Image (cartoon, rainbow, N blue to C red):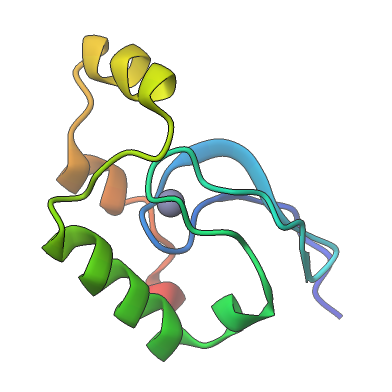
Length: 89
Ligand SMILES: [Zn+2]
């Protein structure tokens, strides 16, 4: 059984939100890519599809307040995406 808590978005690598707990999605919506953690995220193909679609639209933030906060701290999309665990890339 997987019982780890995941605080990194599987799609975009955003940190600081609990997306998976005890092997189950929390239905948290990522402030960055807008993905809602759900059982569909258990498939790496689904994640890649969503990620490709999101990046293809210019990687728009879902939460504009968080966007301003992160960008003021030098947010960089590629650096953030480097946080995506290898099995979800
Ligand atoms: Zn995300």
